[in-house]
Image 1 (cartoon, rainbow, N blue to C red):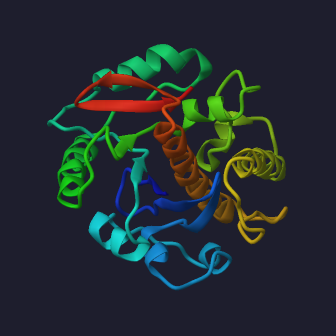
Image 2: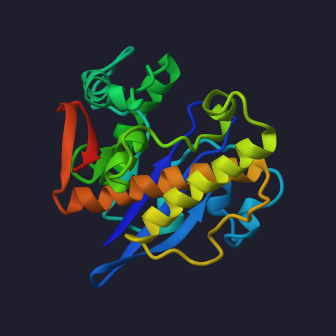
Length: 248
C-alpha cells in the first residue's frame, strides 16, 4: 500500500510540501519527500531539496501521480469539497468547535482556495480517486494532538508565527524553539514511519530551511493520517460533501 500526503500552499507563488510513504509488511517507510512540487518532480536527493532557493509550483495531480506511480490513498491539508462552497463549511465549524480550545481552529477558506478545492476533487475523480474513499482531507494541527498525546494544545512549530509564539524571545531563541518542536514532530512520526537519516535538520538550520522542513512535515502528517484512515482509526467532521478526517 502507498499513501500520498500533500500540503498545498494557499497561494500559488509559495511552495507546498509532498510526501510519499509505502507499506512493507506491517511497517511503513518514507519513499519520497520534497518541500515543493517542482522539487518532487526533480531528480534531486533529499538533502539537495533543502538547499538553495525554493520556488512554488501549482499542484498538478496527474503529473504528481506520473512521478510517484499509483497510490492507494491521497490525503490533503486543504479545503476540498464535492460541491461548490463559499466561506466556512460545516467541517470547518465542527473542527473549530471541537479543537478550538486547544488552539486548533480552522482558517476560513478564501474564494480562490474554495474554487481550487472543488476543481481538485473533480480532477482527482478523473484519476480514479473518490472523495472520502481514497481521497481525504485532514487538518494537521488537531491530528498532531493524536500523534503526540501528551500535548494539550497546538504544537508551536510554524516558522511564520514565531514572533507570535515567543514575542519576548531573541531570534536565536526562536530558532532554537522551532528546531526543538520540529524535531519533536519528526521523532513522533518516525515511530510510525521509517525515515532516512538524511531527512533531518541541522541544529544551526536557517529559518528558510526550517520552513522547508515544516512544509514536508505537514505533508508527512497527512500521509500518517492516511494510515489511520485505512485502518479505520479516525473521526470525521462535517458532511458527505466535505469531511475533515482526524485520527482517533
